[in-house]
Image (cartoon, rainbow, N blue to C red; front, side, top):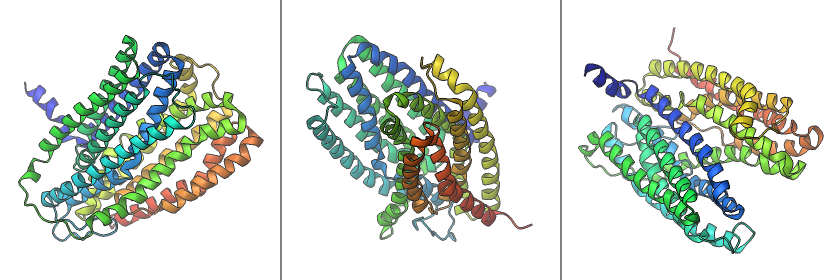
Length: 455
C-alpha cells in the first residue's frame, strides 16, 4: 500500500519529469493515430473522400493558430504571478497583477473572457473557410457526400479546442503540465479511433467529423475538472479588478510570440510545396516523409525541456537567480544531449522507418539526409536557448524570424535549381545560422550571464 501511494504521489513530487513523460505520451499518441488513420482512410474511403479528409486536417490546424500566442503568454504570466512576491516588479512583457493565487484569479478571469472571443473568431473562420473552399477550386468535389456536415463537426471541435487551450495554458503555467499533455494524448486517441471506426463501418465523412466533435466535448469537460482541482486555492482568493490595459499588454506580449511561432512553422510548412513547384511533384513525397520524421525526433527531445520553463519563470519572478540559473543550465545541457541523440537517430533510422512503417522505399539521398540532420541538430540546440529567453519575459525574435523566413524562400529558389534536393536543407541551414539560430544563442548566453550567481 505504501509503494502504491508513493507511485501515485510521484508526479506531484517531480512535476517536470512527469511533464516530460506526459509530453512523450502525447507525441506517441499522435504518431499512433497517424499510423492508424492513414491506412484506414485510404482503404475504406474513396480517393476524393480521403483527399478531403486530409485537407480538412490542415485547415483545422490553421484555425487552431487563432490562439495567436496567447497560450504561451498566459502560461508564462501564470508562472510569474504565482512565484511573485510583494516586492516583485512586473516588467518587460509581464502584467502587474497581484502576487500569488490572487493574481492567478485575476489572470483566470482575463483568460476566460479572452478565449471566449477567440472561440467566436474560430467559429467565424470555420464558416468562412468552408464557404470559400466549397465555391472556389477543386478541393470539395460536388459528388463527394457529407462534406459540409463533416467540416462543420470538425470546425465545432476546433472551437472547443480553442476553449480548452485557455485552461490548459493556465494549468501549464501552474506546473500541471503532465495533466494537460496526458489529456491531450487521450483526446487524440479518442478522436482518431472514433474516426477510424466510422470509416471502417462505412459511415462516411460526417460520422468521422462527429467523432472529433464528441472527443472534443469529453476533452473539454476533463480539462475543466482538472483545472478546478489544480486551482482550488484560487477559488478562495479575493476577486480584484484587473489593472487598466491588462488585455492590451497581454496582446502586445502574445501576438509577437504567436507571429514568431506561426512564421517559424511556415518556414518548414512551405518547403514541400516549394519543392514541388521547383522540381516537380515526384520529389515531394520522400522529402515530406523525412521532414515529418525529423520534426517528430525534435519534439521528442524537447519534451524534457518544455515542462521546466514554468519553474524557471516562477524562480525568475521570485527573484531567485540561483534557482533560475541552475534550472536553465541543467535543462539546456540535458536537452542538447537528447537533441544530438535524436539527430543521429534520424540520420541512421529514418530510412528504415520510412520503408517499414510507411512502406515507402524511395527515400531522400544521403547528402540531403546529412544536411537535414545538421539543421535538426542546430535547430534543436538553439530553440531551447530561445525558449528560456521567451520565458524570462522578453521577445527579441520577431525581426530575425521575419528575415529568416523571407531569406529562406529566396535562397531556396536560388539553390534548389542548382543543387537539386540538397539545396533545400542547405538554404534552411544557412539562413537559420545567419538569423534565428544565431539570435537564439546570443540572447540565451546573455540571459544566462544575467542569472549567473556571483562567485
